[in-house]
Image (cartoon, rainbow, N blue to C red; front, top):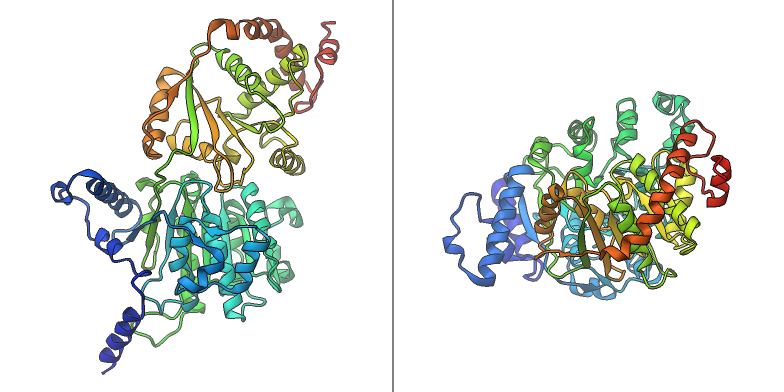
Length: 544
């Protein structure tokens, strides 16, 4: 009798789902299993799409979960103001109004239009057949962050009983992303919602959180906690009870976090699931629990098989992926064989930009040493030649948090023209005004290159330009990124010798001075990150 009632309940749920929401084509696509032959897939455009989907199915089943439901995001954008009219999964009107009036958005992007259909079902716990843990693989700048933020805020406004409960934990890779995510959450200005990060300055030696057991006021009434995985690991093991009411666990830039050599994220995720099951999940239901820890993983690239995501206790997982079918940026590569060729090329690229008023350029280096040396070359060169007054700064981990925040703010508000950095800001940051990316040093993995390029062509920005400075052996990394982003190729660019002749002559003249500057910085005679005019440097180095 009970089985019959349950089957009728399931049948009612399925019959109440409209055709435009329950995509049967996607379910057919899910039937393609790894190892199936491709001959019956046909040829032409549809055959190509089917083969691409089959490849994605194999990747996901190998690295994430063998029973994962896989959904390809289509190029559909839904008008925000009409969402509740055309969708069966409503969004709270407060959120709709905030998106239109505070964020000034008009439409949901394809990623949001698709994923929100499923993610918003979290309000119903596991009562919906279509709900489950979610992995979103979408290129950078196309709306992944708002997918989970809207879901979380909608749940808070719907339930109305989350006051004083820590119901959401958002983990990410960097402090820069923590600040950005908190900024987006707070911009909605939801009443009685308290969001915060972890300020290690509140605790002795900046690492010990055991004091929280005697100081519960630290996270009293906090609803959403946003932090890096490193900080969270230290907090979690002494304060497991803090997370008993957890409803959402979001891991942003999950592929980056899983790649950390010291990361223990698999154990943390499963431990949190066990805690929630112990404290929250209802008993007496033989079929499905009423609630589960909703896990949302977000990244521009899929985790590798070696990251061992299969060990996670995922609940009815759904995998969403999106392939951009248009060219997002102009891209060029330049061969740089000799040691200082890259310096000459970067200077020429900067000086060839017609106007500097709207110039916003990110230059990526592989190390802080490389970034600092380039910073000195650029600032000394422009001061020596008076070619232009460019605002140039370096952004590295050696800087204080206060200084890093100021530099990043100045760059994002276009008070700086050029920011030289490492990969600490290659992920997630909403660099909407950036119009040039220069890969000064090629990374060792193509995924990193893809994330760097993602700082351009955000959803609400104009097309930008990317320059890759490569040696012959590094071309393979660039080619892998090309295939990953479904591009046909990248155009080769080359400067004539006479275009670089004067630059080469000036840099040759400046090399001894810059070498002396670096030595005096190490001896703490000169401040490492301070800008010095050329004439002052000559005097300080005793060359005047």
